[in-house]
Length: 514
Image (cartoon, rainbow, N blue to C red; front, side, top):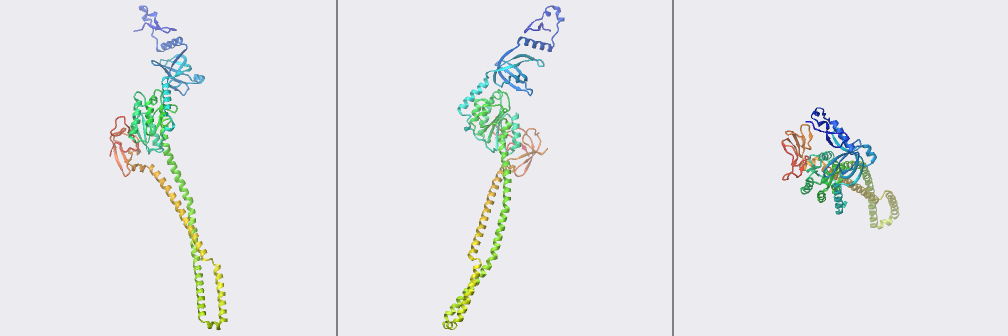
């Protein structure tokens, strides 16, 4: 049945179509096409509201690559779309932000392809901060006055964490980004996921409960609390006072990773460390572990170079020692022979003197001959003494030997000190390397699971079909297994909101049948 009302050009309301007043006019009535009606509505709006000022709170703001800005203005009961064309953005030099309360001036227009109306903004000015942003500033000022933002109360992030707790949605891109970064840069780090809602009613309570439970479980060395980007309303759970106080009360250091780099929440100010994005949070956790491995490699290379550079000097000292010992061994026999000869001469002289004393008469008779012989022996004794004086004295030989022994002892002691120091450094580096060795991790009860179809390591149950053949590598030996069930692993004796250990080196949660 045709309506008897028709939208008249230039009017802002509906009026009775005079063509419908007679019984015969139904044959003449022509319906509007959608395009015609939309065009007429557009003309009516533009003529009725040639210029309007509208106040409201900005939400859903986004700026396209073209430079155009799209957002909505809302109040308690209604919402209207707005657009600021790129040319206007360049002219006014400012753009609104989510949560701010503004007044915009522009013209009403209809986007005919969709049949919706919007405001083409020509100018914009602040009308005071929006309700949510005012609440944000009040809470920020309150907590700052209590000292919750002070750097002195923030805990240091462990440099080499073994287990990272993640509090976020299990279905979002956040957990996938975190697992990807940790898998690439620190595959030895375990990840515990506590699934929560990150926006909407009840999200703040779930986040608080997750932080409390992670502290009670006590497995995580550091917590990452976060979500992806969104509007001020989407991120509001992380601006709740109870979430801020739960983060401040945590005994485990907390990294906040909420939204994008330009998004700031109360949780960012309270947390021990703020990351620009969830991926950045994972990089902060993995960075020092990767740096340690690089440092160990560089230190090992330098140590080996130092040992190689000192070995020639050690060999040179050893060769010098051998030469000195050989020279002494050659000289000692000749010295001993001279000592023996001197002893024989002195003994012979003493015997002659004793004999002379016992024969005084003979001595008187043969005094001239005896004196001659004595003089001869004296001359011989003088010659032998001069000969002995030309030879280095035994004391000098002993002093030289002592010096050589001291040099040998000092060289030996120094070599032992160098070798002991380098051995100790090697042991320290070996211990650090072993702590990061996957075999050492396997020795603590962990395992590595391979998909036998393509020999790749399984890090997630996602995409693994039931019946998939598996190989489980243990510290000693390996097992063949087959998937009978797949999904997130739940810690025993915990409710549905408790944490699940993800399949990165899972200790006891892998559901396999070998």
